[in-house]
Length: 197
Image (cartoon, rainbow, N blue to C red; front, side):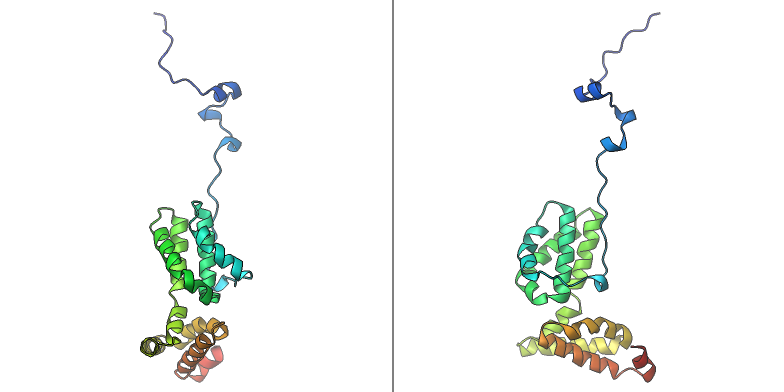
């Protein structure tokens, strides 16, 4: 019995025939590049932005990028603005929040995690301090009550560590509210806690 040739095989692409490349002998150079590694930067390790004006103008465009790594970098920039330059972030805050929410729904875990970190930084203590320093009295009173409740419910040392960066905030009203809240928190501490701080 003679063997018949198999004519029903799929044809190889022309470049594979020329180069002699097939699925079994692909080298690392012929494989697609691996996903880039994203650094997850904690809030305490984020640095202020040096060129704030030009960075804030390009932030929305960068957040709308189709390249997910650029979106991650832009979310980290949004975190920096929230922590150090919040007054510049306010005019575009709505657009930033929309991107953060959209990124949280993204199946790419690096983008999702970075967006969660961004939301945490955007809606942190700074927002409460800013609300407490507004011109509208009823908003300030409610924010002050929330700050006082935070002082009463949290142990002083972690709260003081969170408040420390806001004492040097660019907004004098935020500095004032941070100082008052620190004063209220320190008054709860004993001598040992004060020495530890």
